[in-house]
View 1 (cartoon, rainbow, N blue to C red):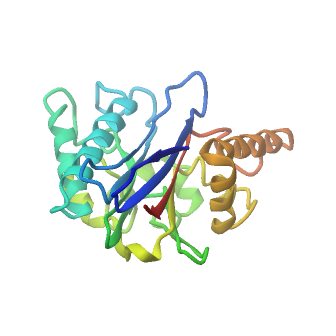
View 2 (cartoon, rainbow, N blue to C red):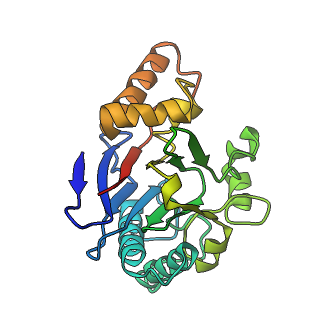
Length: 275
């Protein structure tokens, strides 16, 4: 775990980031970063989970990791350097920048053009802002140990039988009544779940892609507070290793609890403490 800060700073940030690919035969499509602006007193966390399209069927000559790296880089730079912009405005501009980087070579109108889930958190001396789009998770821990999960549950509302049909899922992707991801349309930013919490009410935070949140959401090993406890005691990689062990045990039992054997799994854990 890395500690950033020093004498005279408003906050000391302890941040731990880990990511494991779902398969050694495929590139990891997750992307994560934690940054402390040079001005001190604040920071930002960015987490993306790239959406894997059917092979060769997304209208784009670029890979999903190319997209998540471009979008994640833009989100990190903007959230750390533009305190005058809201997180929704930052997401909108980052999507536009990323789209501009490949609109001349790719069909960005394709329903499965490269896209990703998004978690953003940004804090200063007074508040912690958040933004969540699609099925990654942000956890906010208060000084008394209570943990609040910030979720965008629209994908969870889609019946499993629809999600098993690619055509049916496409009809709901980035459409009203369906679910939303960051793709090529900057207007999707207003669909994100956003909010702000007083800085004094947040002791730590964590961002998880759905490959990491399986520990709670799929395998039911504990609640969100217990998940945060694992992150604090064992680090981000410790949680991911726990998930892989559960997946292996489930596979030995017949694999009935999930439709994907392993998924890219990424976790970011950050402590915010007064310096």
